[in-house]
Figure 1 (cartoon, rainbow, N blue to C red):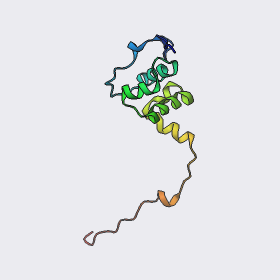
Figure 2 (tube, helix red, strand yellow; figure 1 turned 90 degrees about the horizontal axis):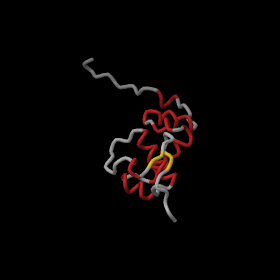
Figure 3 (cartoon, one colour; figure 1 turned 90 degrees about the vertical axis):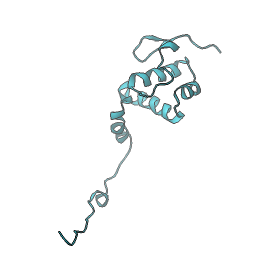
Figure 4 (cartoon, helix red, strand yellow; figure 1 turned 180 degrees about the vertical axis):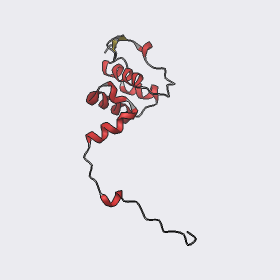
Length: 109
């Protein structure tokens, strides 16, 4: 099976291996995450290669992919992840957990 030499990137432009983030990438901005997801989806690199190249867990990569599927590229923004996760799950409010613990006063107060 031959791999494509280029795929369509997250911005609609053609993308090659040379357009991928460098393997030593440590700061994952949304644009870089989206490029890696597009490369794997398009067959430019395999999931295994992406995880090995960028030292990612499969779960982390699949999380990026899931956020793109559900919320588009902006879903990859780290500051939005908690917002999206909260919207995807049911939570209940327990007033007993929300109360502050009473701290006993010290004798000299």
